[in-house]
Amino acid sequence: MTKLVIGEFMKGLVFKFLYFILAVFLFSYAWPIFAQDSQLLIKIQTPLPMNGGIMVYAVSQQLQKKMAFHLSSHFARKTILLPSGTWEFYAIGFKGKFPLEGEQLCSTKKMALSMDDILELEMNPLDCMDSFFGASRRNHNQQFFALKIFNCEDLTHVKNPEDTCAWEHGPFHSYLVEYADYDLVDFSQRPNYLLGITSLCINNPDDSRHGATLTSWHFPTGSEGTTMSFKVHAYDAIKCYGKEKVFLFDKALVSGAMENNNQSKVMLNEDNSLVQIYLK
Image 1: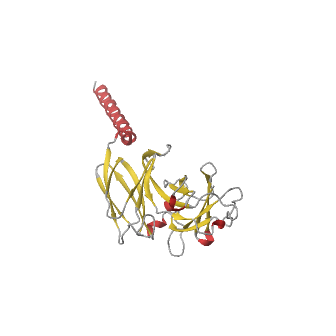
Image 2: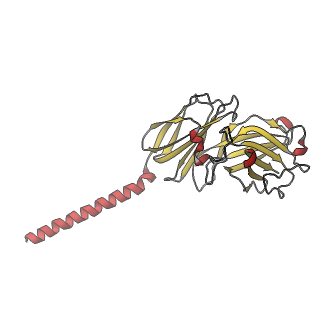
Image 3: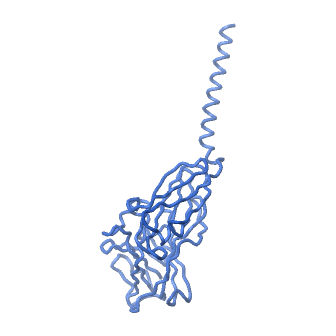
């Protein structure tokens, strides 16, 4: 009789232990699914003004989700909702007087969200070396490569950074560029792009036979799998009037790929510290 009681007792312990293990397993895997959103207040800490705007990217490998939004300056604050889980944040800001102009500072931070919290992003030059930004693409002044835009009639001959569109230039006479915002979205889904930070307009040089416009903009190239999305708005008249054509680079400015239905191409000119965009 005693052995029977002990046996039943041990059986009960085993079942309780297995139940506990199963509960822990289910909780750990189901938590990201059923967890509530966390409200996150974004603040910027910077030693210098960032009046050229700040782009912030939230990325969760755990949840396979991403989000992009901008702040107009270092004074701005923003509150967002994100699912609870582990998130990585990447920010790039511009110190110029006008949008997307001037020297760049960056910030990276990783945090686990389970309740409402405050995220303070400390802008500094060292974080621009993170691989998220394509850190090797920086010139001797520790700025990202300058952007050069080529206005082309045809892209078939563009095979290396020395290629130009001289004597066969395309229809564009002015440009503006934009870093796009997008709401929370799964990695596997295409974002619904929203208006982000948009630059001032620039015109082609007077001697448009060269088909090239060297800008004062310095942008990160990003890296494979980046969540930065970049747009070039091209116009067939000066001062960004006339017919508009928008080119989307949803992998930032990673070199080599033909995008926009083979209407654009990115090439890196390492020798001259340039990111070259060819538009058709």
